[in-house]
Length: 327
Ligand SMILES: Cc1ncc(COP(=O)(O)O)c(C=O)c1O
Image (cartoon, rainbow, N blue to C red):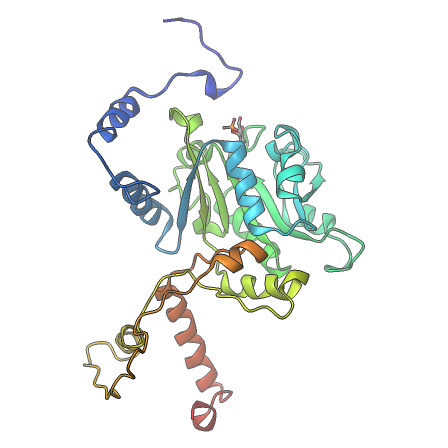
């Protein structure tokens, strides 16, 4: 075993011994494939615990792949990504954001490796959506940065606000998120998604994993899917299922809504006799939305209902929806 230390990268160190033990334990017996195994379930639970119930995580092989997967998932090929001149996606990923995600990186020079709202607004074109420029649709920051600095929750919130105000998402390359969180005594979420990051590349390799990172989304995505359908020339005269591709019966849906609007009250309902050969349970086919638009919904039904019910209540209070519109 060599005794010298390699400081050129935190990738130089070996795998954490506890991880090797865990890998051996996970290798026991037979399990179903393609993500239905107990280790993937545990990963999904941990993503929810660490980053909140809205967060959805996808395990991927390495950090560069995670960044590119994340950017590709939330951009269209003609769009731009604002980042620093020192960003790993700009300097160290062999033009894969351009080649694979198809985006134009709009770089900004910084004092300390960190973007600020002023730097972001200085890099935006005078008007968004003009046909001659690559409109930025993502702001990408690194936590901790490539030069060893870190963003505070307030700094992330300010960047999230300017991004959202300008119809952009905030991506974080969190190859060293754990270091930034530990240094400032923050939770992983406070140092990222909880402060307004929409798409997070969460690294493990720099902290003792053999390999393996995750892309974690916290995106309210339906509106985005609709916008993608409006923007895509291949979508003209097509229809799409912009949902998660999970089945639910009308009665199950009614029960869910009822439990939210009248908690504790029993749902009473009258049902017609079913038609012969009626299909009582349908699962929407989302393959076309994925293939044509590159859109994949991630918001769970429960969260969507919370948002829609709150919106309907606001509209009723404001008099925009009335008894007539309800009928
Ligand atoms: C900030 C940052 N992001 C992403 C990566 C990419 O990770 P990988 O080497 O696993 O592709 C690195 C690797 O050094 C990094 O420092």
